[in-house]
Image (cartoon, rainbow, N blue to C red; front, side, top):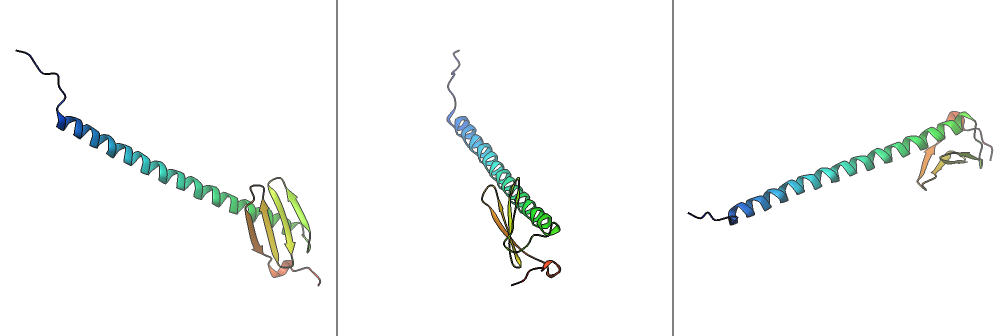
Length: 104
């Protein structure tokens, strides 16, 4: 008796479908992971800018004055603080009224 060494078509189709399913799950998980990392990076940039704004206020930044930090710059225009990070992201914060020490 001679045995056939042929791969059955249903086995091949099942293996291919299983491979596609596993690859799809892997791609979806990778995409979700990348989005989460992007969200964390955005959040870290925001908190970095907020900390720079608070440090500028603590050091009594005046109107039209610019403070330079290692990670960006903070400028003040009356009651607005503009923080520009080195990666060109820009954030604006309002100055609390207790720090409103400007003269027009």
